[in-house]
Amino acid sequence: MSDKLIDLFASILDIDPAGLNDESSPDTVEQWDSLAAMHLVAAIEEEFDIRLSTKEIMKMSSIGLARATLKDKGIEL
Amino acid sequence: MSETPSSSKVIGIAGTFTVDPLALHLKKELGKNDPSFAVAPYNQITQLSFNPEQILDAPTDLLIVLWRLEDIGFEELDSFIDTIKRLRENYKGTLIVSTPPYPSTSEFDVHDLSQAASGQIAYAQALIRFTEEVKKINSVNLLNLAGLIENFGSANAHDIRKWYLYKQPYSEKFWKVIAEQMARLISAQTIPAKKCIVLDADNTLWGGIIGEDGVGGIELGQDFPGSAFYDFQKHLLHLRAQGIFLALASKNNPEDVQEVFDTHDTMVLKRGSISAWQVHWNSKVDSLKTIAAELNIGLDALVFVDDNPKEIAEVTERLPEVTCLMVPEEIAELPDLLRNTGLFDIPNMTEEDKKRADMMLAETKRKSEGQTMSEEDFIKSLELKIEVFEAQEQHLGRITQLINKTNQFNVTTIRRNADEVKALHENSDIVLLGMNISDRFGEYGLVGVVILEKADEKIWNIDSLMMSCRVLGRGAETSMLFMTGQVAAAKGAQTLCGTYIPTPKNKLVENLYKDHNFKSENDGWEIDIKDLPAPPDYVDVSLTMKEGGD
Image (cartoon, rainbow over all chains, first blue to last red; front, side, top):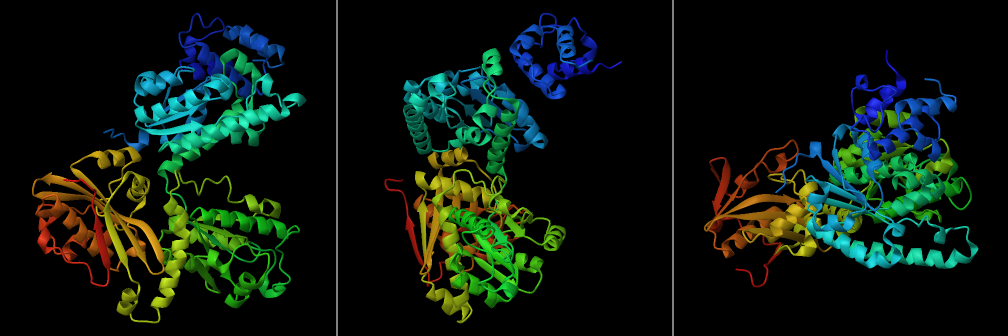
């Protein structure tokens, strides 16, 4: 079953979505460096048409936390 | 040296701030050409200037440098200019550098009343100083980042969150704007620019229909909608001053249109601004073909502007090479029709470009006089003067341009970029010849190039020979070959060789060597220099070789 958020992360990080889950973070994914983090924020904001605060961005240190942040903003995934 | 195929360019990006988003956006803009990117580490322009390849970690064809005054500090401006000069010396590819935007720091807050004057002055001085200094450096292209921000709106262009998080100052929407502009700059290096705008008259140059409304009834002047047509004409004149031809394709009685040009007091365009007239009742397709032939340019160099969708449709269908633009329904948008199209982007415009439109006018004069006397008498009366000379540094820009855009009279069609031409110029076994032509109507300027290369002590080879088609048929080609022979002889050669490489466009020179007594040898042509035909005696030919040459 494909997950929109995982697919988005996978395409920006340029890796197989099968290798990602909600626990995935910069510590577990080699490609997730600070540069990728910047591109991820841009992609999430564009995809869901939202604006994240710096506080929210800094909290999003795993895919699960990103999902929670989006949920707080009314985006259910 | 670098034989990189143009299909897979490597683009380097460097900046005084995080510039990675540009790679992503530029990839979208340049999509089909599929370039790859090498991004230099953040804020390492100085190191980059000493060793570009090492800092970029890859050989690149083109390098973009984005920078801001607030990142380097105003007091470091001169040393930054030196850095750019050093980078130009050490980097082989195409270099694009941005102009500095108005600083976004608090000292430059536009709302600060006490700073209004001093901040503006400091910034304006820095912008002028940088731009002037960089324009003095040969082959550095400027990206007007300052202007882009102003146009887009500073508040929308910046994203303060990204600055604090990633040292990246701009919003994604603005990165897209930079990428679009960048893509235009990049394609202007490779795609030939349009050379002529073909204009309809009624409801395009003025409002209304001259045949019905009369000179007094058409809309053109200070009041809207006449003011929109007036401003459109002003923009056309501006393009003409940059070397773009203007031509008319109008279905009208010729006298009516001429009357507007001659007597309407708010006409910006004069008869002399128009390089080709096609005012009659025949089809516009025929008019466009005639205009292209008259100006000696391809149909693909034409932009056609008309308010009639049927005319646009017919031209689009029958002459797909022509770029068609329809007069907008909202006439207030007409003056901007040709802006932001990228159609006329010419990198490093040369003096020759600016003169070109004037030269063409003289050509029309030449042609109209030619109709009333015999061709031979006419050519004699031209007082044609041809100067062949060894190229100097100042000619290299124009020579590079000819090498890359001459299609028809070009024996080998070998294209070369500015750096390759510079290398040829510095090679002592290569002679780079230019040809200037003038006659009593005016100067054509530098219209011919020969690249002559030493094969051995007695044999010199014509690597390239090209000429603008406007000057053909008057003995120019014979003069050029003859003088090329003289130069080779002066260097000790007895034999001159040449090759013809066919392309879809250069059939014109298929028999050039044969017609000048060259003998077919192997897969090329050669001649004993003594056997070269002399230039016709009605041409005044001269040769200038470098002083102190061997």
